[in-house]
Image (cartoon, rainbow over all chains, first blue to last red; front, side):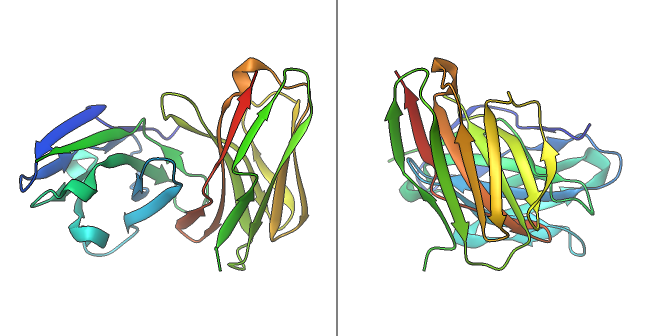
Length: 113
Length: 110
């Protein structure tokens, strides 16, 4: 069965520092890949997704992620963290041709001044 | 207009009661879901409907019964509520390769 692993349940960075949130998937066939953000007491908002084409995907709020088939990874990065980036981030996968989204366990990002 | 709306946002109820959560989407999508988010923020799919038909039913107790009167609505009815049902329940609708989530319903069973 498809699964996704997020390394690190908590990540802390200083404002202005690089943000790196890790995500690995299990499928041998590249799935669709997503990053969602959840602010406190809110629903999930799509940051970016990879379905096909260019492996470096740019999303909202300055985030980007790179699909690396050889590493079965889809890590999320942002060059310079902002206080407003503090939230829970979820990586998710779905098999091509299905709508079933499988979520990772989430990574809480803290940003310190 | 909110794309995916859930009501109520908060629900506090006693053990043994029956309650419903409503979900509506105005995006014209054929697929809708219910997800459960536990206290550790883990998100687990419960049900998926496509055009009013049940597609996915993960190992959810049969006290949980989804109902889709039309493709814009997917309601969740829960019978005989238990303490362990306390969680945040999210409704979502999906087009190809993208899901849109509601704001969630925080259910607390006391």
